[in-house]
Amino acid sequence: MKYLLEVKNLQTHFFTEDGIVPAVDGVDFELEPGQTLGIVGESGCGKSVTSVSILRLVPNPPGRIVGGEILFEGKDLVKATESEMQSIRGNDIAMIFQEPMTSLNPVFTIGKQISEAIMLHQKLDKKAAKERCVQMLKLVGIPRAEQAVDEYPHQFSGGMRQRAMIAMALSCNPKLLIADEPTTALDVTIQAQIIELMKDLKEKLNTAIMLITHDLGVVAEMADHVIVMYAGRVVEEADVIDLFKDPKHPYTIGLMKSKPSLDGNAKRLDVIPGAVPNPLAMPKGCAFHPRCSHAMDICKEKMPELNKFGDNRKIRCWLHEKEGGEK
Ligand code: SF4
Ligand code: MG
View 1 (tube, protein in one colour):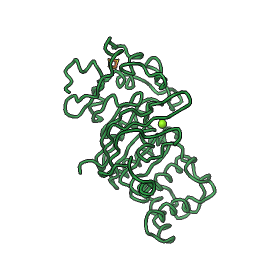
View 2: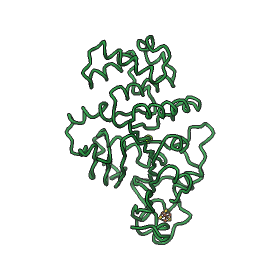
View 3: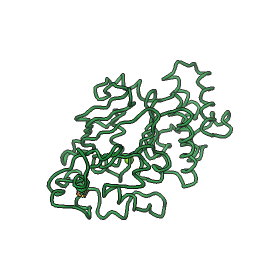
View 4: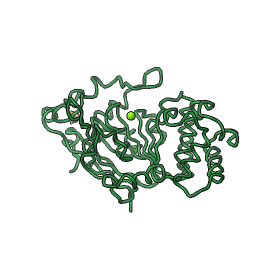
């Protein structure tokens, strides 16, 4: 099997009082074992909904996967039972979030939380689980791991909490780690340390990573392959070097030109005019056309397909279709 994860025409919609929000609307991508796939785009483009869909954690109601396939090692997770998903989550697929304080329980020690995860998924007794926990804390660079294991989350700094989250996520040797904005809440120095740590762990453990971020710097540092999402769809896909050397889609080009805001915590991308469209009133044709300086008549009428462009790239844009993109 070539791919660890194959997402095919995934559609996750939210059924709100005001109408249907097609948060993910026909997303396709593949992830090879050990590979790091970056998923980039502004807030609200469907990145996080894609990741919670893979874990089957879409809040229902109002959300629901309404179509497509999520093949993990060939098995379609869309059709898996809840008990199958429970054994996959944490065991085969683990996730780390932006703010570890929301995922760590303040009333239990770090060691107890990581050990519980280990005991739940691996057949280890309490003592062995705690030893494994100390090992993991050492692996992620937590100083004095033997003592730290008995400390509470509030006794850890933000950076150490994120390291503890990574230790917890990796403690069961998942094949896939989904990291949703893993460094966004951290200051710049700690961000760099966490990126180094994740790169290092990926080498050691060969875990595939799905890295969700609005931060192209993090993508350039870590990803092998990148998909760019806009308005619930993939608009460009390429190897990381090709994408940075020669971005093709007007939205990707806009992202590349955007500078993070001065607080280093960019949620806004200032260079691209306008905003992500209201999902209840998606523009006709290419969803990016109201913001695109290249928009042509056809862009306002017809949605372009995601077409192959050369060997390792796909683009959803009429401009490139005309310039010799192949079907
Ligand atoms: Fe711009 Fe048209 Fe390409 Fe959309 S399809 S990105 S509007 S050129
Ligand atoms: Mg998000």
